[in-house]
Image (cartoon, rainbow, N blue to C red; front, side, top):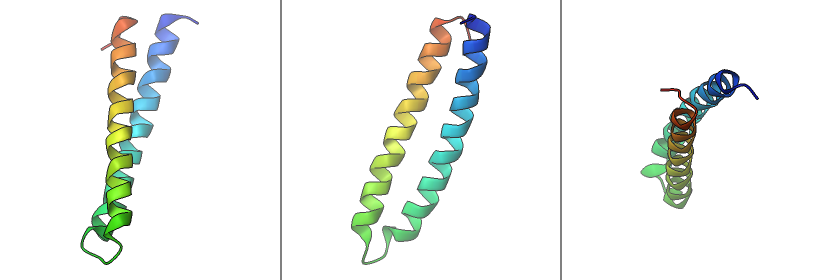
Length: 67
């Protein structure tokens, strides 16, 4: 795969992950003060995982010469 194509694809994936982070966070916040706070805990863990995945994609793009 051409590095420029890979960088563009990784950028698109990061955008998708950023949106997923926002959506998961919104749901987690809604459950944070409820009796279902265990749900919020799991969602916040998922949020952290998505953030870590985004960072990994950024590092991969940088390795290919992207920003």
